[in-house]
Image (cartoon, rainbow, N blue to C red; front, side):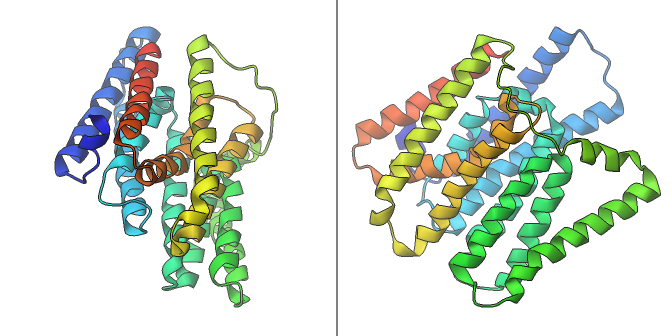
Length: 313
């Protein structure tokens, strides 16, 4: 039922998922106010929460744009559905504006990198993607690992031109100089905030309850399943899409490395994995022929996401 509804790219699907996202967001915020017993919201808080909602909603549509524009999905809205559903695994991220901002800028970077297969203005795309990644690094340092995909994209498409290898370094100095300028002009504390993020921690005993443990476990199970499904079927997919799918695979693996290296462990860090996982899940659903199996997989993901969201309220 669910798979058949989202097998077409209908306006109703986008309206439905966007409405559910807004509804879930407000439900979680209301629960947060009740639990913390803090009913005093300043204008800054309202602007911040509104910004988070706009960024998360925009991330939904950017994910859909990436998959459709680059041929990673057919005429369906699976990626839109899966991005929303996997987000429900980690609703606490709604209160982590730094991670939301970092993941949003990484989405913008991946949008440019995946579109490099067209070989149209590759230099601009390399520079833009590098710029977005280094901006994301200001909000979560280990986002810098995504720069590996920039160099992988250069190898896949435009390795013969030495100037392409220099562009990421130019982007790095551009972001660095602008950040230092405004830090010295407005608040030097910004520099120390970013500097303190340059740390790592391999202690994974952070769970505050068993639901978070379950959410992480199920997220990893889905990730491993769709990752291996892509690796096993990649050779049977169109050759023109191989580089794009490899970038998606690298994105998922790098997202997991961000989780491993980040000094403060939480399920919220899984937000970097949601785009690649949504694309891989969509690709698998489009690959299989059995409509019953499609329904089982889609329903399992959606029901799991909704249940985990409710348990974490």
